Image (cartoon, rainbow, N blue to C red; front, side, top):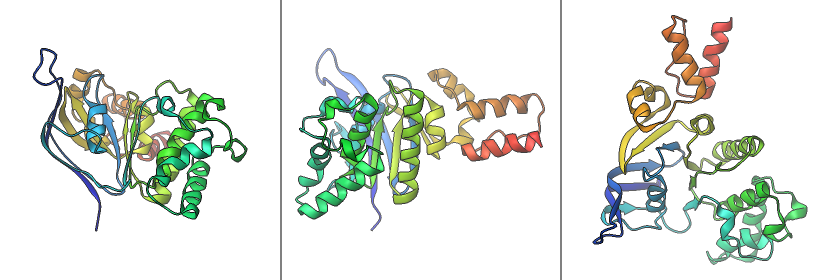
Length: 270
């Protein structure tokens, strides 16, 4: 049976019934299936982090219904995840999740070894204390700690916040390989569309807690007013294609992927 995350008319208020009541989500309807790659865009305060928490089953909506697969099938990697480290070694940190699934020792070891290898953490550092690792290695460990659950849905909240250019390239490669090799569903929030463009095909746009768009990269550019209103931009490759098209260049700007955009540039250059 196919797994899915289904939200029906979901609303979330913080501090309900007080003078500080704030609506974080309003009437969100959303269906996310297996083997999808989704970008979640929106300005600060749009409700992106709240939506991920509902999708992960960590936050019960005040109104509506959230149906979320159980048993570690959905994993959420938070912003600055390294703040949650508590184990004595990187190995023990990555093993905590599967150990709490009541798996046998052999299954736990197999999952941890796979997860730490998948994120590229050097084996000689698996016995190191988490805080002895570099900042980039700590982020890899944090990702391995959720991957060791073998989730079918991986939700990442601003995974490149504060990460340098090389770290972004490394994470992009890791996530791309994971999606290709395992079919895991990715839902990634980011302020930078250029990071999520190569990794995703479906685009969700949040505006003050409401789902303003559920579309693709190719169709997103057809509504420039939406992005401008929210202070967002298309990925650089798509912006350039639209500018070229406006100047009469023989290009198709509404590309659904980075590969498609690059092919348009290649055709233009002959």
